[in-house]
Image (cartoon, rainbow, N blue to C red; front, top):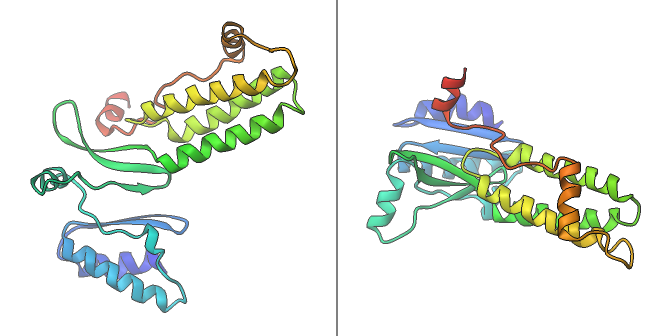
Length: 214
């Protein structure tokens, strides 16, 4: 319903450029001109009502974003707007040469949720898994997180996730028995033994750098 409407109607009726991205029921619509964006938001609400659906107001925002948004916000004495989509907070950044660049970091909400899930799993696993198995399965969970979130410009948040999961794992491994299972020195050796994930970019979103590689 939404995909076809945007491609067959919305794009053709705008004054400027328009782009659309969707995953399941989350979508992002981008417009060159503000009035096109506002008109789309109004018509979108009406169209959804025709299918018995409603916009999630807490997730629906119309913001200025792009090459000129940073300077425009600073002139008003404000910070540039950010938005969250598919677990990433997107914000206006710059390259080393000072050119505009969309940057992304793990959203605070998703980072907190991921760490809580890891903690819950660790607390349960300590009672049923041996230490070696627990370390290997913890490693697999961390790799799964990094496979999605370790993208260009997001290594700081990923480093924090790896650091915190290491702390959580150390705490609950040492609660498997009354005697401490590990010192920090022996724990780091155990992490090396299971080849604990290293922080590196798994998905390079720099188009120029990808072109050089291929």
